[in-house]
Length: 283
Length: 283
Image 1 (cartoon, one colour):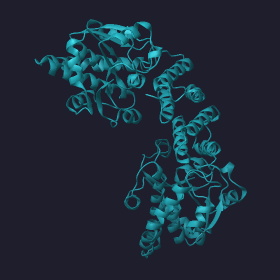
Image 2 (spheres, helix red, strand yellow):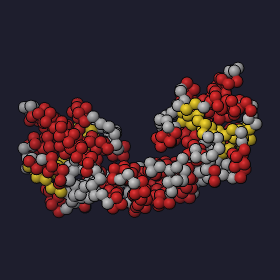
Image 3 (cartoon, chains in turn orange, brown):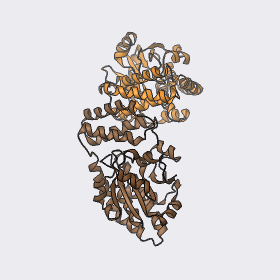
């Protein structure tokens, strides 16, 4: 997805939010906003938004000297997710029909995407998950996915935020094919890195690799060779969350996007409304 | 009111909104955002927000070559306000008790402040006015105002947006004291200038002067001598709207602020909630 003019005030808001999380020093936060402001001229609108996102989080780290401002938030989100994990895992594994089991696990994984909002507003995780389990997805390519799954040798699962990865694990555990779970290359926003993926225990059910990207979305030209090799040859690719949608929606290969649309620009690009869930095959 | 860090993403959003109203050329709007971005470093947080607002609307005019992008919107707002004007004027003038009459007129003038939202969202003028007439103002210094009014020789009324001025006229018409109505110095946002004030017919009930300011708020150091003379010596000053609150809330003289708080930063500064109406005496 390209950058829209509407993204630019939002970049400034993201910089402010991240600055506030990294420090309480107003002068440092102002310096972050100054630098992001100065970069606007150099943001081409045909860049994807996560490319600018990466720049913003680098500025936050450079100015504050804090490499992982969201560390505490991530730990809290993970702990919160792990609390409810056994209940949802049990609910999934009590289902005998494999298709129904995968479907429920996939809905739970989508619901995990609400954690992205944790910083901005209060949320009730259990309620949000139960809502997502029961809601109508605006785009629902589940049958296409399930058909492919039976013959797939491997599946690349591109993670999004850290707490969400706990719910991804419920789905990944049900898949009979080899799963490669890709994380961000460095801490950026509350996104999952190798560190959190291992901490959660995802390595029990998937091979974990770093995409190498230093941005909140798997921008292919910024990924490392290992990731690109998997991306190009995987039988199935699932990309979680808005950042990966922004980074990958114009790529040529078939990708299943699983996310809740929280931003009006992304919702419009996907042809849905804000708050809608989608599981959409592109290409 | 000083500039808060939260104002900075909002400046960018205002620049985008004004750019979209001035032109449909995406490159020109991007250029507006580039220039506003480059100015951020030079915005001291102890400036009032309208000082930066003035800069933003100047950039919009410089880049697009359009001096009054809101002209059409102002005309529409005025026409819309004039349609309902006779009904509300009659309602006010049917009241025999002078205090009750002034109170209702003041509530209607406050309600006119919702027109500020006209650009951003749909609004039903009549419904909003009726809501304001009947609502509880969060701050309501009406008795202090009414007491002063009996002995006041003159009153400075600092206007805000153009459509709103139609409702200000209902109040001004009821005041037995001499009223000087001050406008912005140039077209900025949808704010009232000499042109619209005369067009509405405000000159029948008040002396109209330009404040000289080139910003969406009466920043004293930017006003002309004529305005300052009146401001310093008027028995009563009423300042309408958020922009004038931002510009004047730290001034030394007694001012009655009449507005609806639409921005969270202003609401917080005034100690109220977003959506609250206030009629507040400061000093």
